[in-house]
Image (tube, rainbow, N blue to C red; front, side, top):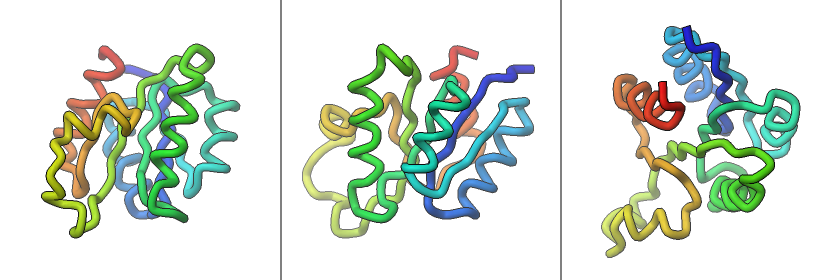
Length: 130
């Protein structure tokens, strides 16, 4: 039983529900928000051990901007960030590798949607050192 807290911020309620169900099976306490404003409130209230974040929400870069804000305050929050996002077709094969992207994405791990449940659990356990 982990009991560790995870906040998911994604504007797709079905994605939030699916990830919550998967993570709940491993005894993680999951809290979800459909935008970064309410997600930020959850971070302050729950002090989670991990943040799972989408990139494209109200704007193309909302998640990236939010991840940057959180990582700048890492001393306060001290949590890893797992980005789970679909890349727009125009950006696939745009000439940069994911390793290069992580230089500016401000995430510990990037996963492309759709996410396999086993891969999600693997990366969550890796980041939480479970």
